[in-house]
Image (cartoon, rainbow, N blue to C red; front, side, top):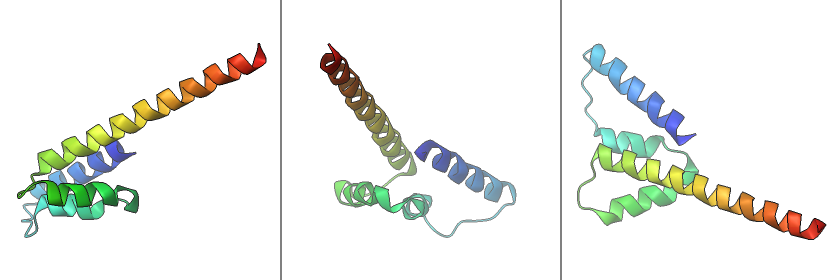
Length: 89
């Protein structure tokens, strides 16, 4: 889901650049403010973690967060399958 959001955000930036629209606002803050409420904790963490925020750092953080969610979900699902198989035996 976040990858789709990042792709849409990047497409909007590209379209604006192609139209020669100059962004007065920081792209990093635009990205952070466009995130769903479920990402508020990442926004807060990133704001206090560094003195300066770069767009690439926020993108990297979002990718890592998505990867961790997938790993956690896979481990959790695997655990449920194993438990289910043990219960049947």
